[in-house]
Length: 359
Image (cartoon, rainbow, N blue to C red; front, side, top):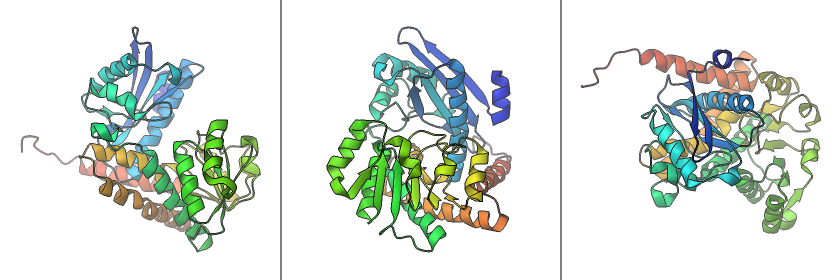
């Protein structure tokens, strides 16, 4: 498929290919939509098999950021950077080169951490441009975005349990957690502290060992291949995307799906399948927005109290999605898109009003 065809199908505004021979940087910067403001979205580094796979992932993730930013009440559009490479081969030169390319957008696009990158990587980029977020606290940033992300998902699970069962309490509830990385491990601790029975998995044995050492008998672990078969109240995906698909959805034994992973649905029709099975799905771009909320706050002069206040508002937005779903009969992922698209359309119309930039 041609690049322009991919852009047309996703509603994408701009795709930029970036290459620096000396550092080995191969990056694709995708700007999906800037109706609400400049594009904001993290930088993922991954050893994609092909250029086309990297491009498709960048476009998919950028579109997701448009919906996440708008759905979080932020005044930013959606964008994403993907670096084609092994995260083990990162270097200062690579991220300084990336900073140069990002700086070339002059504020039209801003980036920060994602899978395969860390706040320290963007300290190097910050030497070349001011349009980076997600920096360590020592450099004026908010530090790890895993904390607000996990907290937002935790509160989102409570709101979704209330919708499904009429009670937000996690005491005695069974939760299957897929992924024990930065967010999943924090979320697991919150769930256990709230009285939930947690069964978890991760493809990395070290992550499993770390959580088992910390929580002992309070957590049960299973092989990653079996996590979809665990009988539970909540299935919580917190690893990579597309985990809800034709193979996995028939295996689910839960009433709620709510987690931090991006792009959990392999295709939109899989959200329809969850709805048909009576499984209440918390749309990922609503429930997992804590990280981007913190990143965006750095652009206003970071204040943790303000960040956590905005993260707590995730529950209100989820309840609105569930209300739209019930009123329209739409599956929750489509109801969330309706909510977001209405906001983009209304504010986009307002921005047609001319303002004298010198006033």
